[in-house]
Length: 452
Image (cartoon, rainbow, N blue to C red; front, side):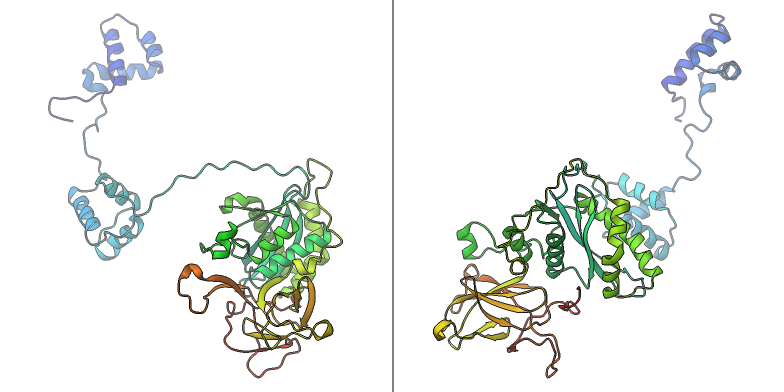
């Protein structure tokens, strides 16, 4: 409060005007209490305060500095340290350093207010939450399938984490397929799709995230892709195209909230059930899920679709599902009738009338059980025994004598046997590993017999 100046509000000015009329006898105290919307007893207190003038209605602490106000010298020190020694520290971290190294104990909010009043902006912008509208469920079962993988300590914190692969129907919220693998990978999505095709049929669309097994996340275009006007999909994406399934990519975890909530429920209930039954391995868990868990879960949590008629499409009889759901690699047969792929060599036997396949471009498929099939013009020309499956890797393969990056193209590098040198395996392929081979992530090889 400045000397000789009284700061009052409009409310206080109105009260003084009414009470002055009471003091002058122009208005009764009962009428004044009604006008001021206070009780009669409180109106008597206000009248007594108004006898000392308008200053009697002003709170006694007005104009006084708060007892807990931060001293000016401390504020200047905080601002100085913010702009010099701790310029790269956020508010919370800066507050901790003030107490630990400068001997100043202030609250986070006090430091934040001081810095904002001096125009010091926060280190990171706190964006307001985006408006997200709820997506209605599809009307009929089979119109949309959602799938995803969830890494988690499914067998307890003392056990290594693994990944649960799940597919669910959007209309009913029911689990279509569920199993565990070591990590989220293309093989897991192929196996999900295989089980859905076997038990239900072909869905109209699939809602998915931007995992590298589902969507190309690189920005490279080969010359062939530029001429075609589209980029080649991933291995899983190619299978979806052949089956006529429309992939819909979610741009945020909130967009696929239904499958995220499903994982939250599974991490609560399924983990408890696995612990109760003493299940601590992937094989045991997959057997338990297939035998009883999915049926019991759907009985409790699935709901009826708004339309009773199903929208699942039947799998055509003439469709080779195993070939569609496989890892495809293109490779040329050399003059020695051997096909080299990712450091492996597969011998091609002679065709009809001892025809040689040297120089032809063949399709090499690694099936979900790890075995190899070689096709030429849709005819099977060679086979090889199973070997472990690794995640396919896209790598630039530069053409001989060409250095320009735009003249390179992308190829899939096949997996190679994972046993140690000199070690023999019952599942060793009918091919020889030669040269260097690019490996998948450590521990990421999935055995062909992982899931029955």
